Image (cartoon, rainbow, N blue to C red; front, side):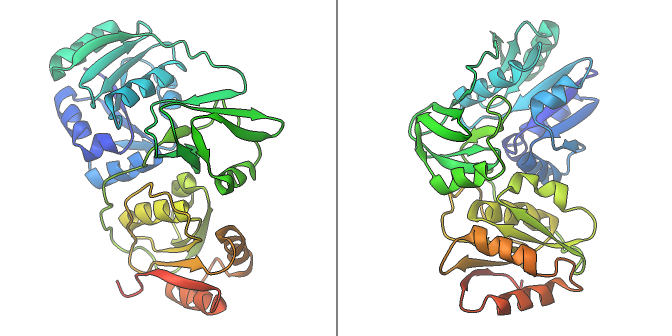
Length: 339
């Protein structure tokens, strides 16, 4: 078909959609968009190229025939996601596995959409997305009440309605409706400045429901990467020469532990007990997670990043010495030093 396939999210790999579509459509290239999608893709062993960009950016850079593959948590959330991506493009052929539908957004390549629908047996549906948004306001649609809501990878609260409305004004971010706010999460987000709501990465729900696969242990010596409440940046930090990760924050530790379980990199996590259960847990051998007895993970994490040698001769020695410096201030809640 001379097709480039852009796959979003881990679910398309975990459910087998990506493997099936690759075998059926024989795309000349498969690009993966999303952090946890990269983990699932690498675990699958499929011949793909991983990116750190969002789907709209990847698709906008392509020429020729291309399609987006996605599996939303529900058919409606999958359709909404396609509509959002299409609103940033001139047209989009969107293969939504959750509803077995091929959407042809904004009069995209109708011949391609029809061809994919016929080959897959999926329904063919037209769609229109204007991409219009109110200035300074962002809607996060397709939420399930009770699930976590993220902005730029940080949980800012829990959805109470199907649509969460956020507003950015006077240097702060507030929930207009549909959100039970998590003040500590908002504080973490705003620490780097008020995000541009028009371009911010917003989502709801878990980041992956499938447990990670255990990878082979990597180097025991090298740099300790610091990930402070930004788990979605992890892949940028865990290249060559990284022996372990110092993860700050409950959700960040969970995400780092999940991804690094697959890559075989141990994690030293600092948490304070406000996790949102956004991903199946998993930690590589050598990992330790400590919970702060008095205070917040933010403060202790920054202290460790500033005072501990982040280029140690041995990960195990670094962990032991770090635990000694924290005696009486933390309790160990995960200990994989012996496998």
